Amino acid sequence: MKMASRALGNACASRAGFGVAPKQSLLGLPPSVKRRKSNGKSAIARTRSPARGTRALPRGADCALTVFVASLVILTQPRAAFAQADPASEPAVLAVAKVLPTVVNINTERVVRRTVRDPFEDFYAQFFGYNRVRPREIRQTLQSLGSGFIIDPAGYIVTNQHVVERAADLKIHVTTNDGKTYNAHYIAGDDKTDLAFIKIDAQTAFPFINLDNISPNLLGQTVIVVGNAVGYGSSISRGVLSAVKRNITVDDVEYKDLVQTDAAINPGNSGGPVIDLSGRLVGISSAKMAFTPQGVPTQGLGFAIPAEVVRDSVNRFKKMAQKRAGLNEAASVETSASNAQRLFGMQLQNLSQELSDALGYLRGRGVLITTVEPGSPAGEAGIERGMVVYRVGKSDVTAVQQVEALLAATQSGSNVNFTVGVIRAAGQNRELGAVSLTAR
Image (cartoon, rainbow, N blue to C red; front, side):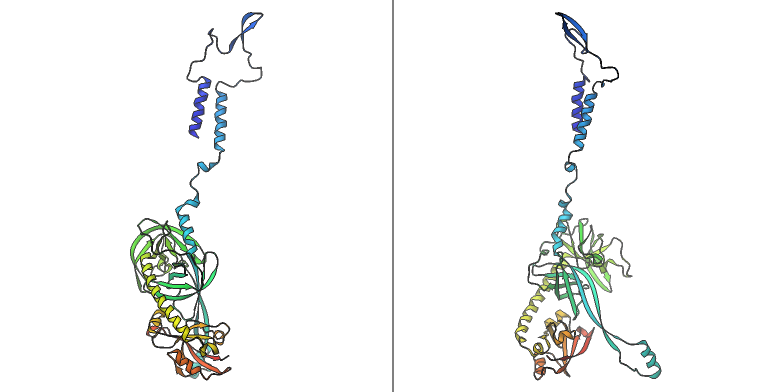
């Protein structure tokens, strides 16, 4: 615009005579005097002056007016030529648009059994030496929210282990960015790296993040945290990669070689991806690592599990999934017409050493429940997939054949007692319950 105004000013200067000698007539008369003829004689007449009451524009004023009008025309032109680049073409916007369809919100629901006692009964027992009634057992549902992202078109998801803690009665619901909700099941996990592997129960192709092309993780590079921050889906925060190879201790567990960022990481972001401006994986954010050992939130300091660790863990988890798939195929043939399914709506599977280790269950005990039919006696009693049958009646069981033999003489309407639950490896976290089921 300045160049255009300057050009107009130069042109007006030339027209107004600025910087050049005024043009003289042949007789040397000024421009305001002109020659005319009257009765054949030449006469010199002065041009008429402006009428009284009017003012003539000073010399060059018409050019100034022209420059002013031209400037207005330039200013009123579309501003696209003078504005910055379209925000839709910013690298950060493009990276988020690329990754967001792969990010999921994870809602887990876990049923916990607790024994409660009336305080008055404790007072009564203190003075009389016995309890009048037995303690009651209640079921409490615990929910948690987190994030994850798809790393395979078949629907395999990586998240934090603490988001989907291994539990026999765990329900996992996954919501994709387009608002669709799916059921998912736990495959494997690792407490040392705080990583877990789950799969969506759906036969469709999903967008995914390619772990074969990860970020170089350079200090100072821009990073973006994507996830379900504080329960708000599709939340974005932005920062830089502040440090690498960080070692921190949380809940007496040491996590090594973490990447550090100043991007905001909040509860709910756990398990979500941290990406660079090309949409490549930098790491997996973990909200529990954004607090000091005393539980105080850190200021501008967050940690993520590096992409290299994620990639190596996923390769290990996939091998576990392949082994488990082969076991499930063998079990489906073995239990195709079982008494447990026909009478109580349960499909059972032998717990091999490999499967017990993958699930974290005690070896050599019980039979795994792989499917529970909705509306069946087992389903109505609250038995869920992933639980283990340890006892039928008064007999301990370690194989499907034992359960089938014990149920062979069961008739419709008969009651059978089952001891169901989970015994963890090394005998920790025993969650067992006695259930009486009526055969259908």
